[in-house]
Image (cartoon, rainbow, N blue to C red; front, side, top):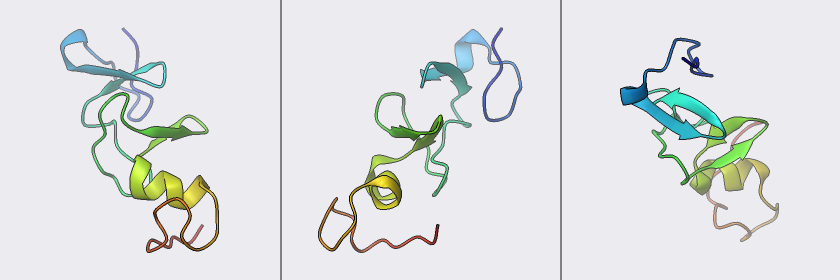
Length: 78
């Protein structure tokens, strides 16, 4: 049985969500920045960690400048 990359506990078949090439508990597959629950295939990845597409990934790692990436109203301190 594989271990969850977030909590390091075993992931049983009935509870697994496969994303980023790893098996996760459904409760552990969350955005690293805002902690929003994610679904496999509908999020972005940076350095092996999951992020929601809007606003977190686009704000943190998308193009800079006003009006780019659709997330200009979100400002995070890095």
